[in-house]
Length: 96
Figure 1 (cartoon, rainbow, N blue to C red):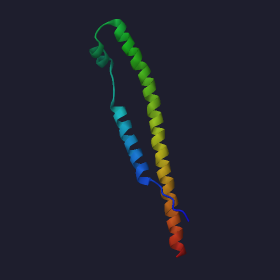
Figure 2 (cartoon, one colour; figure 1 turned 90 degrees about the vertical axis):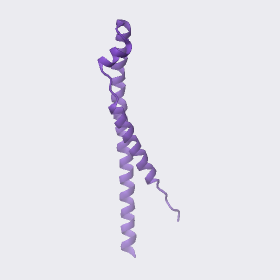
Figure 3 (cartoon, rainbow, N blue to C red; figure 1 turned 135 degrees about the vertical axis):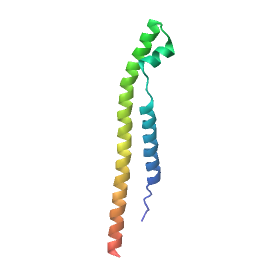
Figure 4 (spheres, one colour; figure 1 turned 180 degrees about the vertical axis):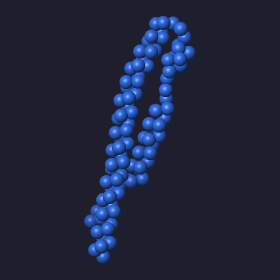
């Protein structure tokens, strides 16, 4: 019979790393004042920077949603493997 090797530690590490990425992602924030300070008072440049910021916020939301979906999927994999392992262990213990 073949052994099944589940990289549980690696999956947990990937989930934890993704959580850290999302925490850093959430902490990045731009304000209108930051944009103005960075690009100066030229209206054309300021307007372009504000438009970029608006579009970035839309992408930021999408990336946050997708990042959370990855975290949820990794958690589900961990939970499923843990539950399966526990059930098999219980069955083997009960059968001996």
